[in-house]
Image (cartoon, one colour):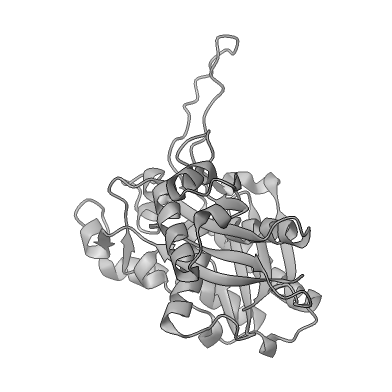
Length: 328
């Protein structure tokens, strides 16, 4: 039996923080931020944690589909900002939405997380053992940002999005046409967050202090993306036996407008076919791709059951990067 995407949803906190708001405590300006990033505003949590954002998105997905949470077989949450080391954010989502029959787990691949989570979910669905699965990307980046560092504080926002996978007709095709996933742990220092030293009475403490905030080598990340992401886009299209013109939309991780323009130029896919919402959401890490996907469905730009082919591509800390082509 084939499986397909039957519902999508997203949620962002109600507080909107504009670039002008950031100038009250950062040495920056709306013009400086927008010119370099394409961001005008972002949504910031004032108390909601990652599981709250993910649960709100999950409830919208189920409401649109008209099914009960008890019908869900598994929940996978992609996040780099879990509520806690344990339990998993997915288990907290299970509790908050009442999905008492689901098994749950988190995946941490930073801003590539949703692509990795969707790949994992697709393989569970292909096993034939599960009928319905929730795949969510959610991050509360505001809790790992150093709000005194303008190089990172201006970039990020909070939010969650996701989709529901379901088995369909017996002779139906899978909605995942091809995937291409990669990691390079050698370059992990390019983006880190909440690095902590070993703490126990048997370990001699060193003078170095643990790093609790997100730290990013902006130039290193830019170079990595320009080298790696166009190649994964080219490779996944080839794996799917498609041409670039077969792809209706590229939904890329919303990191920086300049990055998206550079990827478009290098891969030779018109920028008009690169979906964008970074101006109003900022970089929401694992939430960025599913938030944008749902917004496009809500606006009617794309439709479920349309058989359109959409390429999802993510890239981020780890380092991690990868692409998936889906049929809607």
